[in-house]
Image 1: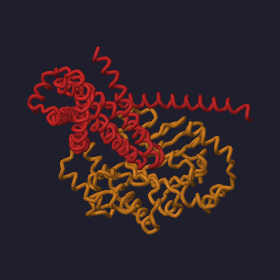
Image 2: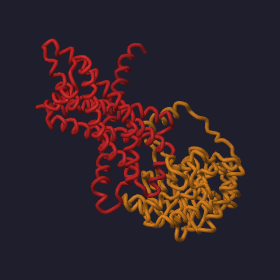
Image 3: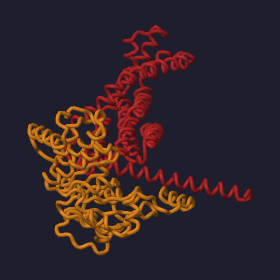
Image 4: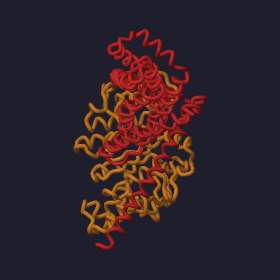
Length: 273
Length: 271
């Protein structure tokens, strides 16, 4: 078991977060985050609503800038990279967004092909073959000409996953892959993530609040609470952790904090400002 | 307390004014940054990297130009007839009905043609652009483009800007011609003037600068409508309600900006 202060160095880390702080207005949402995700591992970042896990993911993707600290992706400093360097770096990653985020005006095939058409000079035949191959990998063959609006929630996530892996990324980020899906479909997505790691040997970072899914797929877990890391370790280490807040989160118990209306309103006003 | 009420009200009003002023300045700043970025993708980048997708440009041109043409035609003919009725009524007091064609042609080409077209495009396309970008923003499609290394301004906004810069002047010319034709139809009906005589009078009154003035205005309106609608669309945060609110604000702001710009440009060009 490792808490965030004494996490041992991970050799050849795909993602490194060092003393990261983030704020929305005056409100601190991430506090002194230190994290190293090794290459080839499935790392699940979990926590309750408002724990800061989605904010941490946005920082890892370079969509938000931290207030302090730095973040390295595949050895490259995200904070001090120019726009063009950041765009180049993003070609090495794939992202599965919570709602899929497929472009509604394009078909499934056009969505999956989009990164290839924008970043490569491949001929049309190769692009079509790669599209069919990736759609086959996510068990969605024959859906090339469907529009995203015609797909179910699970199919939408599979199609988005096909787009995320079309460039054979070194790191795949998944934001709540099982959210909004029934348990059987969610288990199918988990199986798919495990298969992808084995087949493509990629590093996979999953943000999730689904305990069942997290313990099913994780090599290592990081548990966030109120913007701070409670623990980072293997599933066994997390389950045997004695920390009271970790226990509460694992038992799905609500926090005992009573919401102070005045403090909440003040916080909300500061956020809006 | 009752004695504090006016003070508190004044404080709230001042705070509200301050917030609105800051938001206004921030909006202008964002629109300017968008303008510079679009300029870069439009002019500098194609020289050594990937040009804007032609298919997207053509698709936008069809959406905002070809599909709007029937409505534009109805508006133009109606405006021409309306203007003609007023011109006949005003000029007959001076016995100058023969000048109706000249009045309609010059007024439409200089002022009302660009203005009517801009209103139509602001109501139709600006709302569509804001709603599309706003919906993409809240469904994380814009974020998805960014993390795929695709610049959303290059991919989504620049094709709209090119299409708008081409189609708004084209639509303006169409509206000008149809409005003058509408005026001619009314004159033929009311004054017994033949269409060829009406056309001769209209062409004799028009100088190239009248047409240029209208085209300069329509290019400026195209720029304004695109930047305002895209800035509002890309600024949407929250849920579908915010998309609706942003769409309304985009149409109101774009329409107001068109009128004010028209006034300023007319003042500068008429001197």
